[in-house]
Length: 102
Image (cartoon, rainbow, N blue to C red; front, side, top):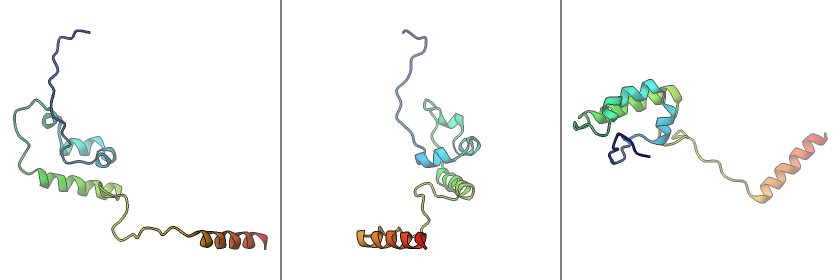
């Protein structure tokens, strides 16, 4: 279908945000970090020089509101749970059955 507008191919830009951060942030927070004017890929001007500062501020606000960092869903001090072996699972099953029976 012919159109009046010609679309320009541009490189993908992530703006140093992970997909999790984008999904967890609300519209206001995203607009504060990257406004629509900055997002336009055809603009000739460069990204502002204090991008790192703004990214830290954005992640800080998101962490306060949501409680998780953008890169992982676990806190740093939490240890991963160890999977129980077959015998341990059987012992737990027997103990649970014994406690139900009494």
